[in-house]
Structure formats: C-alpha cells, structure tokens
Amino acid sequence: MDWGRVQFFFSEVWRNFTRNLIMQFTAIGTVTVTIVLLGAFLFTRATIGTIGDDVLKKIEISVFLRDNVAAAEAQKVAADISADPRVRSVVYVPKSEGLRQMRERLRGQIDTSLLTTNPLPDALRVQVVDPNDVIAVATSIRRESGVASVEYAADAVQKLLRISDVLGRIGLGIVGLLVFTAAIIISNTIRLTVFARRREIAIMQLVGASSSYVRLPFIFEGLLDGVLGSALALALLEVARYQLLPKLTLALPFLPMRAAGNDQLAFGLELLGTGAAVGIVASWVSVGRYLRV
Amino acid sequence: MISLRGVSLVYPNGTRALDSIDLEIAKGSFVFLVGHSGTGKSSLLRLLYREQRPTRGEVTVDETRVDTLRRSKVALLRRNVGVVFQDFKLLSDKTVWENVAFALQVTGARTKDVMRQVPRVLDLVGLSHKSRMFPSELSGGEQQRTAIARALVNNPKILLCDEPTGNLDPANTNDVMDLLHRINLKGTTVLIATHNALVVDRMRRRVIRLEDGKIVADEERGYYLSNPGQIESALSSPQIA
Image 1 (cartoon, each protein chain N blue to C red):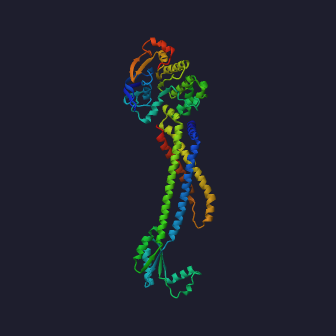
Image 2 (cartoon, rainbow over the protein chains, first blue to last red):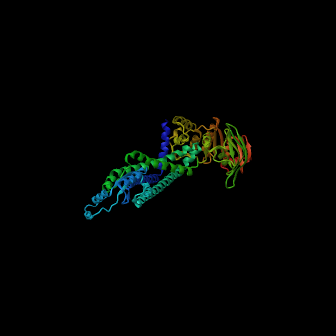
Image 3 (spheres, chains in turn yellow, purple):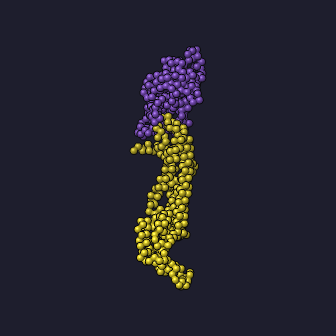
C-alpha cells in the first residue's frame, strides 16, 4: 500500500468537499431528512402492520346452524369445515353455551333473567389462517347443508386491507420523492464542484490522467454526502427511539409499537446503504453529464 | 515519430482549419511551426494530443494512430506527449513542486517515483530553489519553466509548445528557448508553434510554414521570413502578426 497515493487521493476529495461547504451541508441535510423520514415510515408501517395483523387474526367467521340440526350433524359440519387447509380452527358453540357467553358479556347492562327461552341458534366459530381468505372460506361454508347463515366482518376486513395498502403506497411515494430530491441536490453539488475545478480537470486530462482517476474523487464526494447524511439520520432515529418511543408507548398503550426489533443492526445498515447508494448514483450521473472525459 | 497524411480539419461552423496536410517529423528533431494567427498551427498541435480529431486523414504519433484512438487510450497517449501553452495553465493554489508533482500523481504514479522525478525536472529547468513558491510569486519565464517541468515529468517522447514565449519578454524568451534546446539535446522531439520571428531565426532549425491551413514552405535551417530585408525589422520588433 502506497500511503502517499492514498493521502493524495483523500486530499483531493477533501479539497473538493470543502470547496463549497454550504452546498455540501444542504446535500447532507437533505439526505438526513430523507433517511429520517424513511426510517419513520418503515417504523410506522411495521406498527400498522402489527395492528392490522392483530385485528385480522381476531376476525372470525360465525356460522349459525338451522334449528333442526342435531348435535351429531353439527359435529359433521364442523369436521367438514376444519378439513379445509385455509381454516385454522373451528369451535362448536351449542345454543346453551352461546346464551351463557352472552349473559357473561352483557352482565350489568341488560337484565337477561327476563329471557324465558333461548333465542340463539347453535353456532360454529371459525378462524382462518390467512385473513385474505375470510371471504372465500365464508362463501364455501355457506354451501354446507344445515348452515342457516354465515357472518363475518367483511367490510372491516376489506377496509383494513385497503387502508394499509394505500398507506403503504403513499408512504413509499413520499419516500421515493424525497430520495429523488436528495439525489438531485447531491448531483447539483457535484456539478458545482466540477465547475469550480474545471481548470484542474483540464490539466489532469492534459497530462494523461485516466478518466476513472478524474471521476473517482467526485464519486467519492457524493458517497461522503450520502454516508454523512444517513449517519446523522441514524443518530437522530436512535435519539427518537430512546427519548420519544417510551413516551409514545405510555401515551398510546394500546398500540403495539415495534422499533425494528432484533434487526436493528440490519435496519441501520440498510438506511446507511440507501444513503450511500443515493450519493453514488447522483454523483455518477452528474460526473457523466458534466465531466466530458 | 509524427506523421500526418492527407489531414483536413473543418470545424462545425464551417471554418477549414487544416487542408490536406502531409507531414513527417523525425524522432529527436526540433521543428518550428510558423504562420499568422488563425492559420491552423494550434489546430495541428491539438490533433497530435487528441484534443481534436481530423475530419479526414491519418495522424500517427509514435507509431500510434491518434485519429482512430479509443477514448480510453487517450490518457496513455498524453503521458507520452507533453504540452506547453502560452498562458502556462498552472494551478494558482499549488506550489511549483505541487504543480509538477500533480502531473505524476494524477496518473497514479508511486510516491517513490514522484520524489525522484520532481527534483530531477525542477533541476533541469533551474527552479529547484523556488519549488515552494506559488505561481503568482514567479516571473513569466519562471512560470513557463514550471509548465515545461510539468510537461516533462512523465518523460514524454514528444514536447508540443503552443506559443511558449508569447507572454514573455526577450530575456525570458531566450531562457525558455535555451531550455527547450537542451531538452531536445536529451532526445525529446520538440515541436514549437510560434509567430515570434526572432526566436525562429535565432535557432535556425526546420521551419514549417502554414497559410490558410496549408503548408506553404518546409525548410531545414529556414528563416521565418523569406525576404532577408524583413529580418532587420523583425529584430527590432519581435512580435510579427
């Protein structure tokens, strides 16, 4: 390793970097904002995903049987349903048990002692493996003999799926837009450096510097903008995790918040890598456009 | 060493800079390229270090076809061809040493070679004692000598000079021409584009004269001016347009 060469290269990078510091700070700041928002977006999506999963897992299909169905026949229907691989569990709830559960639920609210007969039908409570299959499974159960009606929170399921999908798309769109902005600003910063150094570049080319040698310090400058920006963003996200998240959890105890969990290191590296990639791509494009070598 | 065959150069605006040039320059020679401003001297030099490609014809430098040379190979060509300009093209924020070393460093030279080559060329151009100075602290002649040192530090076989004395007074002009002469004696082929009659006539070397992009005279030990009577006036006013 020739340290003199390494030193010369980094002195060139440093010279570029410090030539217009205000632009560099702008570029770094934009990367920071982008990566912070990307991190916040990923966190929010993970949280919404968790909430959604929890709710969806609780959604069950209520199957009400006809009055004249005997217990043995009801068991057969239950067995048929559980044979479907999409079904996680089937619980048989006879009408007496249903009434007991209802009394339990409504205790203190309605005086159920006034009921002289049991108005409830025998029922099956069906849970599916994948919430997306609720509708299809419900439709196939409806065809079973002895089934009077099938109920499930169809609207709720569909809305929840749609909302989480739309939120994901909007978030991704915003992050994409921010990444694009950051790339444009880095690209402009590099362009200014290229312009400020056009004399040196002309001399480098004149004395026979290879085009990769001329380009490399500029690419490195973009990389530096990206890495510094995302490192700053990671620091801010860490602060938020330790300062903000506990307060948020206290304020909203019912929300199951997850801060990247065990994959923290991978998550951090991903964000850092995103910043670095934005920097390299932006400077690559800029050098290609403004440096005719 | 340098060969042009049927070379023409027409700029996009329609200006015909060079017109069917045929030219051979032998290894180790010292050649002047003279003519009025705008006759194609600089254009011809630019073809040799591939700053420009000819519209037609073949350009060969040190057995390399320069006109068809791939972009990626241009850098290698330029390490073999040193170029010096009228306006020196030094970097004002670098010292004499740094300006010269720059030419080696950007070609990826090893530090060991930089430390060996830079003092050698600074000694050759007589600027060892001013290596820590910045271009603004030097005279015009010293700045040109720095530029020559930079052009030579890669040990090129050919040195191209585009009006090297254009910005210099007579004393500095003589210094620079003596230096170029000494460089030539060490084996480097030197090609100088100039319209300084005094310089050309004092050196008495091969002179190629261009007019409107064509070679109109090519003489060994030639004079800049064909009419000897004009030499006297040339001596009293060295810059003849």
